[in-house]
Length: 120
Length: 173
Image: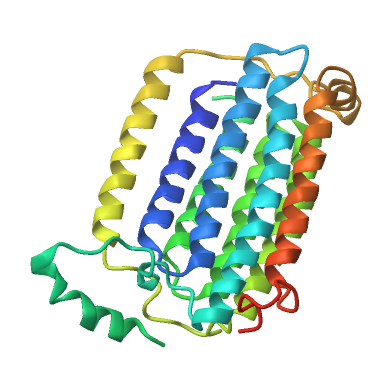
């Protein structure tokens, strides 16, 4: 098997995940895109495990570990998203600006009305 | 182009295409369901790469558990079932540029680095027996550490999602 096929598929999946993380607004969709990126990494790990014919199967075992870590991450992430939803009544990541830095002086006049618009 | 490569290409097209639909669809529930298709196609790709055990674990954990958790999250945040117009934030064109640049760099690197590398696929390399021996002989210490990590994250998720603990610091909002 030509090694270019799985690695190219993994690269494309990873960049689709990058697009999703940057472009999506809903926090759950961001988590889904993170899962896509993790799956691209898993595909690379399996591919190079097969390519190097690792006798300890480090790549495939690390893939299993990554899957477990992804499950832990999604559980914890969804708990955080639900907590945010309980407190704010929305999960849009670009409207959660409480921890944002104070804008510089000229922009300070613009910022309060954006915050008011963001209030549920 | 061998038969394995044809099958893998088809599965890869399905996986990448449904991943694109995950990040572009306007319905939240459909995004979760396209994620099932993408993960299933990837599991097929693992099967082609002779990693059987990883493929079944992928089906069990990703298609089974993770997508169900995501659907739970969608339902519990009262997401609209139908189309919702504002799922994309304002910087989607910048995101598209970054994603295309990432894809260009990564594809260039892997094609230049491994463009002529071939490997024969032999069955049995990723069976449950081989991987079980690997996990419980060589990698047993990371495996145990990982179980502690999983326990810690589950406890953390429970603590975060319960509203009746946390005392007087505003846990009951």
